[in-house]
Length: 498
Image 1 (tube, rainbow, N blue to C red):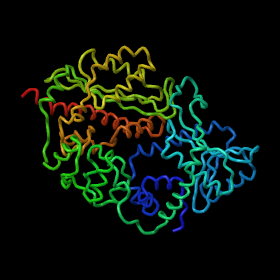
Image 2: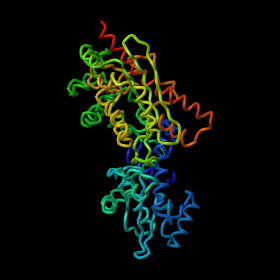
Image 3: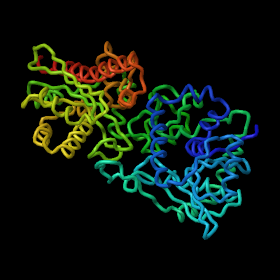
């Protein structure tokens, strides 16, 4: 088939060629494997950042179309030597790209290219190749390219009043780095075009076969049907043991019970494999009891939900600082008391930080253990609140020494279940230890979905009916997080009373 290789598909090809082939030739398969709504919100974040960054170039003209009309409009403005173009589109020798910002210098009769990223830094593994692809294409189109830049968010910027666009972004000259990879990118682009133009599906596994599960492409299961749902790719930190994983794959060893004895795993890895092979649960009761003895009643099972706004919305926030909009607490005053539930959810468009901290202070007493899952997250948010709102610092600081991370029991491998699959997420642990509880039927499946849902509420993306349902969905999801911690605690608390 006749194919124009887009910059997006070239970058996808660099990650996994076969996944890129599916995207072009089997879009039904590719779309079935796409990640949830939160993944789409990442794209929306990129679009939002680009719109704001364009304000750095107030005379820019936007080329809105991506078809032949867009190409014609691009050439029209190029012929007029217009200084700034947004999204001009170029096609040449089977390659296609829309340039974020193209700037013409009438003195040198050359151009500078600016690539806008929603990151807070330059990704050396991807951004140089991204821009080099564009520079190579523009040179094929007989444009003289003088400079290449990355525009990214400035993580040190703190909003105070109106957005300061000049301070919000950093403009980084990567011209030398782009030149250093331009030739290899040209070669790789030609190889990608040839590979992706094939009508028949490429043979063999996709290259993600040599990566740990968290780095697999979205079509991995379709491309590698011989790999079971729970495979050697799920062994803890196996992605960091590349030689070990490669030896397994090269010998067609995918099942955990087929791993030969000469493959030396770490202690953590071997424990995981043993639990699977023996189909048993390892519980270090005495060690778990010692952990639980450090807790004091009342117990507060606490979980936060937050939104990481790329463009700071409120004073005191930096790019991607988390906006705390919701929490759930399940309170147990004594081992045999009735569980109490408290919750907070702000769906107003203003900064919820102050009311969040104020209500939290009322819901949490001055004594008792605060139980969370992955305490670095809650503690980090508390520190940020204290920085923005100094009047809350005494209260927030008092929480630190009271926080206990229930995930530690599983990180320390005091409890290992084959169904954890080497992970310690609350969803995996809950489904294995308390199977009657599940997240599967919830509309919101994770923190990313919760953040996206809240953002749609406060930005007016829902109808009133949709908004009410979304609010209920948020409360249900966050409430299950804390009830799940309580339920897991109950499983272990039995050891204390035996």
